[in-house]
Length: 217
Image 1 (cartoon, one colour):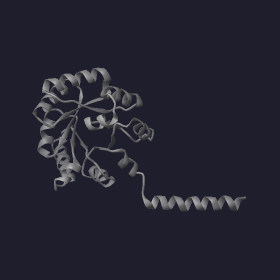
Image 2 (image 1 turned 90 degrees about the vertical axis):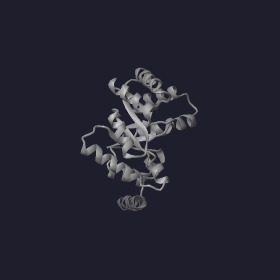
Image 3 (image 1 turned 135 degrees about the vertical axis):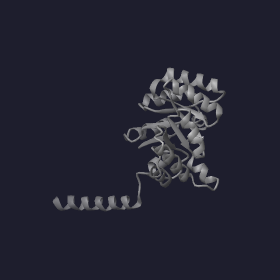
C-alpha cells in the first residue's frame, strides 16, 4: 500500500516527504504549468528531495512518446515513471518502454476494459480517475474495485493507482476497494491526519498534563 502526492509544489512535497509516509509523486501538464517551472527543472527538484517514483507525462505520437520516455529515463534514472495517455498511441509506446524495463503509468482510465488493455501493453500502473467518474454520475470506486478484481483473478502484475481523489473518504475507500496506490492532493493527505475527536482528546490530555505539573510543584 503506497501513498503518492499529486502535486508540483516543492515546499509542500518536501514537508510531506519528511513525514516518511510518501512513496512517490504524480505530475501532469496542468500542475506543471501552475508551478511556473520548466518541467525538467521541476523533475530534478523532485528527484533531489529523495523521491523514488516520479510520474513524468509525455505526449505526441507513439514513437515520440517512446523516444521521450527513453530520454527522460536516461536523464533521471530509476526514479522515472513515464505517464502515458490511454489511447492506441499511448499503449504502443507503453509496450516499447516495457521492453526497455522503464516504468509506465497509463493515465485517464475510466473503465475496466481500458485497464485490461493497458495491462496487456505492459503498464506498471493504471490510473482510474475516481472523481471524474463520479462526476459523470457513475461510481468511481466501483471501477477501481472491478479493475483490482480482474487483476487479482488473472494474476496481472500491473498495479492499480487510484487518481482524481478529492476527499479523505475517497482515498480510504480506494484502498478498501483494491487500489494498491492512491495519489492525492496535499490537502487530502493532510486531512488524513485529522479528526475532531482526536483534536478533542489531545486537548483534554494537554489540560490534564498541565494539572499534573501543577500538582507536582
